[in-house]
Length: 343
Image 1: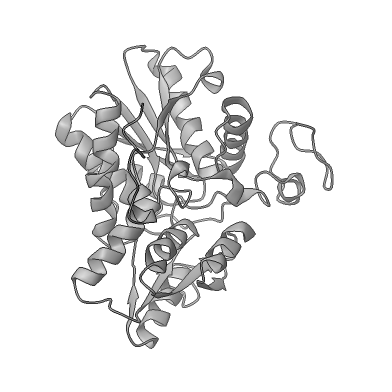
Image 2: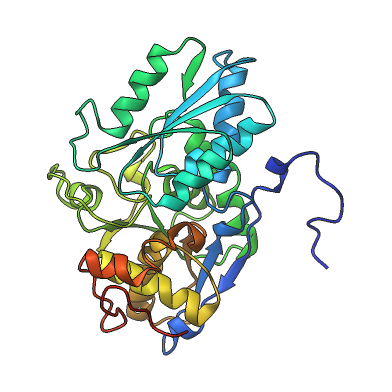
């Protein structure tokens, strides 16, 4: 019997972490290298960002920046906002979240369900534009008395939360046998904090960042040059600038994956593994399986982060009409607008 849940918890935030590690089977058929998914969608808020929500709120309280009646402001693709709202709900804080307009309607509704105020801004503006979601959030925080900007892109509490939780969990769950860790970077907190811990245990562990085509991170990693970011549809990963929470010195390689490849694998994980995930999980697993096939080593152990719950994307990657409207073909899986496949 699992040691978890044998006793009651004091509040919902105590449920965060110790997510299962599950071997991938059907999607990894023919690959001798074992590949496992870290099921972050099983956190209470449904994503890996639950790990940083509580940490950011507690750090702001400890520093005296956030007190009774305060307001938490953040630029988010949705999941960090939900994690912050969950952590703030029992404390009575007001939450205001700024989201790019490409994010799913499900995420907007979830944030509002938690009592948060949601501000939607354009996705297709540069990082220094006043309507960019990070700039708008900073402006809102400056204009409200008693408000704090959670600032996940630069907040040291972000990678520290993963150093203290995700890294140790993976080391224990794999009994120190992990050889490759695959993760994306929106803020860089997950990959940075986890990598720092794993490399302290074994410097030979390979850390591989996975980027959507259109993000600047992989190109900058390989060339040192900053390209102009392009719009992509996968949510929560990639960036149009280098976030302060990302330490590229800890990353051994960076690979890119298209929207179509990400959504195709995300849907396969749901239909073939019973793991209901979003596009970011598909993006990471696609890259992990490609590398595992190249390694062809049954003694290696590859871990891919399964970032969040697929229900957040029913109106997007799981919707045939949306995929057709955005001209994203999944090799014949997608029907014409208005149609759906059985299954």
